Image (cartoon, rainbow, N blue to C red; front, side, top):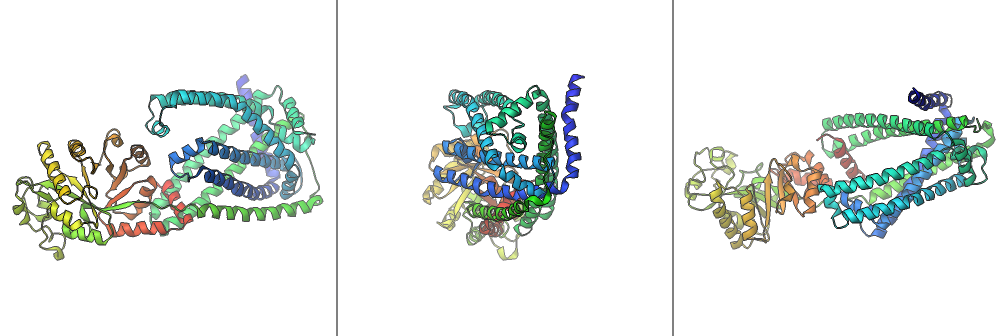
Length: 607
């Protein structure tokens, strides 16, 4: 019963705040809008400038997941993050002070913005003093964390630990997490003791920051449990609401974007509209959370004997109101200029290669010299082809084990000679203009490719016994054409991959997978050719740790391209080189804002 009473007492202020806010809805909206614009001016230029200075000092751009981690763990990154957090904390204090002022008195909302401005020096000093104390309190915990890091992770690669998560990773997580929890408990206790320091500055005209802190400590004595329950209860409710709203907005946005498709012409404006809508909802929810928290502080402050209200005539300070409005306009301009400056640096040059699948299967008969010539014309960097051994030991470029699909012949590659296979027309099925096209040998493909395009040669053995001969014949052909540094080999057979590695370490070798068990990035290969849906950011990150590149197949829908690029694939394998090349060029020509919106679209849409 005692616990239920505590919960009831802790949640009652939230309802009282909402009732009180209804009476002051106009001033609250006016203050929130004006302060939000000033907040943008403070956070936008200042925070962007802090991070830009830190990155420039660090010497390289922080883009990828692990680059960001490395930057934030560096001394420069930690300093930049600390300054950024200080700006955020100061802004939070000012917002709470303004909302408390609006809820406590009369007058227009813009006047209360000016009123906060008059208390600004004291509020900033209050924030800085508390921030320094929190940092000093964190010092022993940070030292303990550093010691634990050296002992548990000091000789480990951080990227590998984060991605592979071995037992030593989890031991470190438990130790670091325990230290963080202890620090948060100690810092939280201090925060609750100083919860009334803002109203002390606003209403008591405290002679100094220390006087405000002493006043808060005196008023919170004996109320810490109630204040903790109140703050944590309100926080828990809003986290639950925020998660529910976030899930709803994400599901709705994904549904809309799936309907709109991935074409930049449609996806970019649709994403922009959804982001604006989502942003307004998030801003409204954040403003409501700040309002209720400020109201809770004010109510508990009054219960502890603080000043009940603070009134002011409407017309006494119109100069401050107009000044606040003008400052808000300047803030909006500064925030816009800052955003444009950030966007100007956000262009990304994506080094993504295009491979013609089966030499270009949508524009010419697959695995033919005609397809290869078209792939070169359309700008493919690579052509993927399939090679099999014939009964007389020749290397035939063909995918299927028989000619039923491409030539309406029952001849099987492994049991037929090259001359027998060449009797079959494999072009007429595709179109009359390709009538008479024949199966080519690997030597003919190597000669036709020359230096215009690289070949990604997939070895397709009819059985394990055939693997050694197939590998040796293909390597001999590539060496004869002086193509060890210009062409690649790949296979589904692990036996073939191992043999290629042993016989010719200088040639790139890859593994082909349409479905996987375990972690394919651990294979001793240079690249992984995976079905498009397997080319996730997680796999790309795992592979990058071992200098393995991800090639995604078969990507014929250009709407899929942007998402794969964002995931970090190095190569896109497609039947339609011209379409994918055109779409890739369109993506590279997008303005920075358009590119960021397209990236946002890929983060919102369900794939």
